[in-house]
Length: 149
Image (cartoon, rainbow, N blue to C red; front, side, top):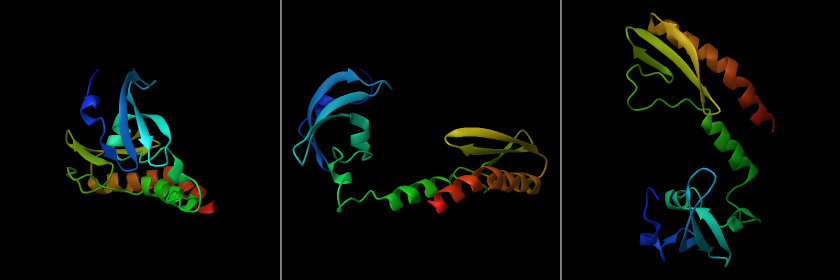
């Protein structure tokens, strides 16, 4: 199998989970599965890298009840955060979704993890306007949907 050697982590604790055993099997996405024991006593098969990265912190027991840190509001906020404009640190133009390639400004926007090509523009000002128009067209309906909920 590729990636991490799960056997090196047996007995180690990750948030509310402790690794019990390497299951030596893959899920439908070819991710390694391992058996974890939660603080609540439940044992659950989970994707090892999701636990290692902190994406999964418990068997789901922490999501239930009043003490839940995963509320409807926090889910909405995370979805709203997804649609915020964040410029990558290696971006040379200083604008999200705009890159300078072969003497032109390329504009793209990402919707639900799918990149949509908007076009190539001769000036940065035209590219910025196209990006703002695309944000208005694609992001506004999504943001309004979550604000209404």
